[in-house]
Structures are given as structure tokens and as C-alpha cells.
Image 1 (cartoon, chains in turn blue, purple):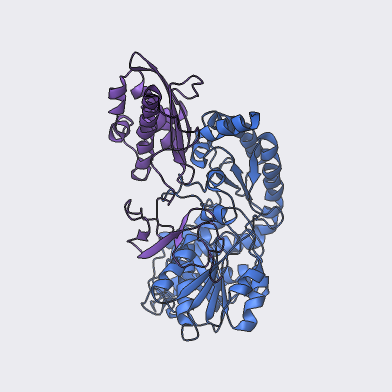
Image 2 (cartoon, chains in turn blue, red):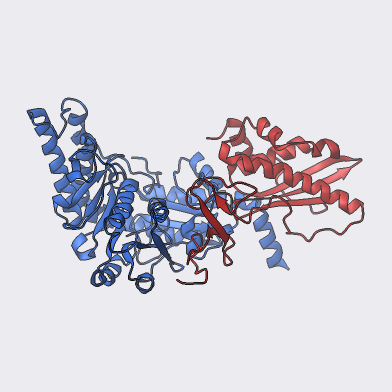
Length: 393
Length: 193
């Protein structure tokens, strides 16, 4: 794996063991899990085994795991499926202002069919205050969806506290844990959530294989109507090789997660400590304490993220940015704006997310290569010229 | 994503800098939509003797500024005013569709600098430095829900998701009309919530 790939939040590499586990189902073993013959049974057993592994990673029962193609699909299924499943009781949902677009836009879709919603704000570190969630609850609220960790700023949210507030009020809680699963320990019973989304490409599994945990007994309506696959919650022939890969990745994560964390935290902290020290006017975004172990994010003032990203790419260093220019919609990150950063600062967003195998040498390369890039871009920035002028006067 | 020529002008931009004794200064854009450009021109015998720029923005914005400065240098004022956004994009070997607005900014900033020079010549008041002119983007460029580009003439409504917007008094971004909290900045919008 490349020592200069710092874009875990976009996708992780597929572990060789994962690929080896998938290989038989891409070549010789082609059965449909719904078929009764031997080939079908072989596929069905492989999917069952994968379901057990995914369930074990988050402390769930296998029967509580519904496979989907992507984290976005899991979020859509959770928000739309849970809300519409409870709509006889009420038509109000509560989400945080920093949710992934798959959650926010699912809420939009619900609003088009008569639901209303409340967005809960976050503080400067991107943290949701459980008291704000409680305030947002009405007698009509049927669902709260709050992410477990934010991929842009790395902040881990107090989901267990939020769930504890919602349970006695009979309000379901979904958490988008796509950025967190595989990187931090997660137990759905301890969290107390009713649903949780996860995706394999965030922990060394293949793309196109993800899952939604739904607590036993909770009513959820399907997005994809079809056959009896996934207990009727998601029609369509199962992605057998993908799910086998997801299962293998879950098993690896369960076995290796603590070691990965131990290796990545000092490297993450070196970036968080050193970059602001080496470059003036660099802000760490997100929480320093409740933070994903592989995640270092910044706002570099007076420059725009895409320029930094492209220059780093020329040095072989892969990162991501939440700037307007790197998003196809050309708008600044809703996460950073919700945290109170102004547009100009939010444009300088840069996220370094580490993968396993990231070495101290890779961090050293960033610390060496990055300051001159910022200097170069600031030299052509009218905002920096303006700042220097104002400071001088 | 970017053509070779765009990458060349981004990585090695021509004419970056500030002209302290500029005859005209033009500034367009604002950080809300990601790009801001300042152009400085020095005029001699009716021609652009020197052109410099500073740009806060993406790779395309930097490349466009660089290309505009090259195209403008040595031209008469009228010739420079005739540089169109399409010509700049064409010279760069094309731009991704969602970056075309960057090329609009480039020529606009140059034209603003020339207008500023002409105003100074005519003895008119010089706009305060830092006050951006033209190409206003205060209302955002795309629907915050579905990312569809908003109709330039009716930014208060997204046709794709049939949502009406209002401006958030706190951050100036657009958010759904009647929402308790701004989708852009998370601050309460008054009313309930």
C-alpha cells in the first residue's frame, strides 16, 4: 500500500486476504443464494457466514444485518424506511446539521411526502449537544438520525447519550457509522441505537458492499421491493463476492482494530501537532479528544483546498478537501459552515485520513512537502495580501 | 479532469503578483462560491503594458487568471475588453462543465480593472479597495439539497427538488424557506427551533 495515500475517508485499499476470500465467488462459485441446489446452497452459506462476521463486529445478531450496496443506500434505507415505517405515530424527524448528504437528502425526500424535520446544530468542534436533540423532539418525532463520527472533521458524536434520551420517548435512533466502523470499537447494544449504517470500503473491504443494522423487532419498510432476499428488506440477487469480502474485512477489523489504532494515533497526532506549528494560520478542525484515530483535518487560511490537493497530488500525496471547488456543486462544506467557520476559511479545508501501513516516513514527507505548497498558494492569494496589509497598518 | 494546458497554467501561473503602481484594479468573486480574483493593469499608450493578478480559488481559477493575463498583455484596451470567457476556456483546451464559472470570473476581473482605469482617467471616484464588483454570488450557486445549479434569474427556487429558499441572515447562504435552522451554518433562523 502506498505510504502517501491519506484518503481513507474516500476509500481504503482492499486487503489481500479480502480479495483471496472473494476470489472463489468471482470465478468458480457462481450460485444464486436463493437457489435450492448445491451451487445455491454454497452461495447462501457464504452470505450467511459474512452476515455473522459483520454482526460480530458491532455486537449485533446476524438476523439484524441487512446487506446493501453502499453506505448511502444504508442511510437511505434507514431514514426513509424507519420514518415511513412509523408514520402512523408521527411525521417528524430530527437530524444533525453535519450529516452526510445521503441522510440530509433522504430527509428532503421525506419532506416531499409530508414529513417535517428539524436540523440540530453543532458546536465549533462539530459536536452535537444531546440537550439540543432533546429540545428538537416533539410529540410527532419518530426518528432521530445522528452520525457516529464525521468524515470531514473526525469528531465522534455522543450517540449513546442521544439514544438514551430518545428511548424513553419511543423515538427511534439511527446512526450513520460509515466513517467509524472498523476504526473504533462499536457495540450496538451499548450505543442503544435502533439502526446503524456501515460500509466495507471504509475498512479494507470492497466497494459495493455495505450493511444496515436494524434492531430486532423494529419496523422498517424496504426501498427496493422484490423477492425475499434480506428478509424482504432489500430485493435483488445478493452481491455474493462483495458480501464475502465485507465479511472477511469485518473479521480482520475485529482482530486487528486495536493494533491499527495504536499504530495510527501517534501518526495522526504528529500531523495535528506539527502542521499548525510549521505553517502559520492553520486551524485543526474537529475535536482533539473525541476523534477518529486515523483522522487529521485542517483549515488552511487564505488558500483554497483544491489547489493544495492538486499540488500535493503532484508529490504523490493523496488527500481530500471539503472546499467548494473540489465538490462538484461548488459550495463550501456544510459541515464546516455548521461549525461556525466562515466561507473563506472553510474553503481551505484539507483532510488527511490515514490507512494502515501509513509510516512515519509518509508523515515526514507531508510535513516537508506541505509548507512550501501553502506558501506558494498564499503568494498568489488576494486574501493573504489583504490580511498582510491590514496587519501592517 | 483538467487538460494539460490547465494543469500547466495552474502549476506555473504567469504574471502572479501585485502592481503597487497599477493604473487600474479590478476584483471579482467572493469566497462564498470559492473564487476571488484581483487584476492589476498598467497602461501605456493605450495598451496593457503589464498585467498582474492574484487569485484565491481552485486549479481552474488560477489557470484561467494566468491565461487571461497572458492573453491581455500588450493588447489595446478595446482588444482586451473583447476577450471573452469562451475564448479563455478555449485557449485552455476546455474546462470541466462545473468549472466554467471560473472562466467567467477571469475575463470579468480583467474588464473590471480596465473599467477602473477608464474611470480614473475620467476623474471619477475610485471604488474602495476590496469592494468586489460584478459577478455576485451571495446567494450561492447550487441547491444545497440536490446540488443542481440554480436558475440565475430565480435563485430562490430549486426546480429539481421544488424547494423555496431564503437567505440566512447569519451566514448569507441559502437555506429552505421556513426551516428552523439554516442548512448551511446550523444557526437558528428564528421562529421555532
